[in-house]
Length: 457
Ligand code: PLP
Image (cartoon, rainbow, N blue to C red; front, side, top):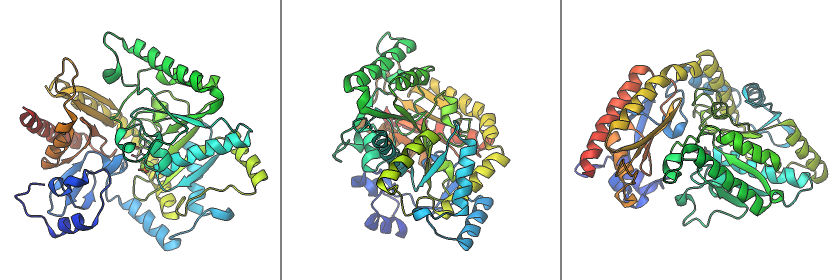
């Protein structure tokens, strides 16, 4: 916040009462809060009436933008009919049944059952518990470790934050818990060694996963979890051939592959699922965010029939399947999930993503000439621009300088909301964005980048 401008009443009240997630809270009064009042299409407006293009769909989730009348009508109708019910103790609701059926229809591999949660973190937490439950059911009580990757983001509950591979989710939080192993991040630009080709890099990191599995013992490892494209780690797209190579290792050792499609589901990468875009064959899937286009909180885990049968066997012995959340499968979330999928289909949102993706790509590529830009990464309508201190050597800025955060601040001043992931600026605009709006987004970003260049020099 520009301290010469007095804080509004809402900003003052916010500072005195709200604990903000993912915020340097010691500097809250300096950097914000930016209080958002309303949204329309790809724009949000603050309490002063200033417009911002929401270049991140909020938190990678509001894929249909803001104020969609069909979504609002679906929510209103559901609230009138049944504002709350649950699925515990063999209860059901029409919206949960319909959404589970629709998810099975569009799943990238045959799925048998859908378990609903309220968030992506709960979905991934559930995945781990289900993997443990399955292996107990199969009489393999030692097969419990979960492999994740450095820079992965899988959420913030105790287990999902442990799966996450980012320092600020571990340091100071007594995490990760044991049974979680982190393997290499598949980012060639950052982790490729001097003189190493992309193929050599790929061979090295797949070899290191093989070593990890052998060292730990395949009989102790239940699952590997991966975002098809890493989101909050910096929008990292692995080299071609990465997933098939990993898949072969996991198959060899009977390790299930959990696809965390919380960001990449529902058209974001130009296909229904990110796993389809990157040639990954999941055993089970986590989803949330664009599942309801963020009009209500909801997450889901999809599992295939053979795995479901293991739960049934175990439930026979134990008596009940002891897992579930009060708001998992909330009728409002499920009704909005059904409506969102219907809209994605009837408005051909995936076709739209594919048709505007070349503009996204072209404007991203144009940024590579900028002196601060080390690498641009993009797929469908998700991407990132990595800012560097030295293009030739790929040297990063001193993290204490906070260049990414400052660049995001300049975006805000230019009417654009982007997210800084250390020094990468992430892009994930609502999937309904038009070509003209995409160009406007990048015009605003270029102004922010120019301000950032002047600021660093
Ligand atoms: N998985 C991925 C890939 C995510 O990007 C996120 C959130 O950004 C999560 C899981 C956690 O989801 P939630 O914030 O709904 O708990």
